[in-house]
Length: 101
Image (cartoon, rainbow, N blue to C red; front, side, top):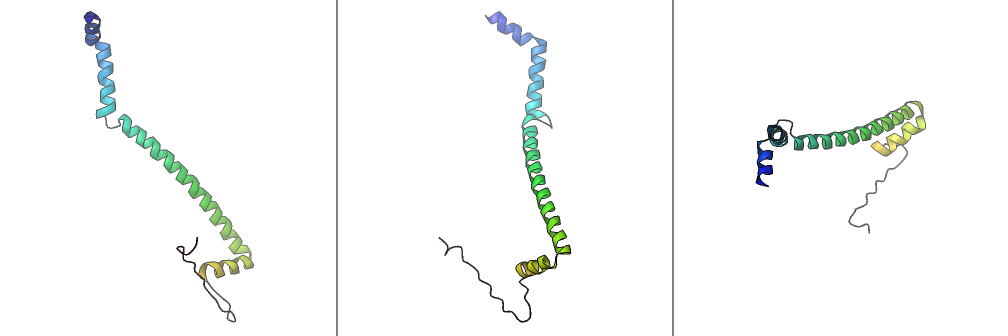
């Protein structure tokens, strides 16, 4: 039994492979935990890119509507910048989130 263990410990290929895996896992600049974190970061960035692409598409569509449709432009100005006509009064109602149940 001990001779089998002794053979494994003196096997130069096994020791070389073991040393390689230890080096790659703990000491190398591009070690395994670093690679895992990079893969996770990459997937997070890809999701963020998809969200940004959707946002860009929606913004371009809204811009095109603002350029071509005067009614949309007026609605946008009223909602976003609280603009009003000269003969109108504007009332802003804000709801306190602590009061809503």
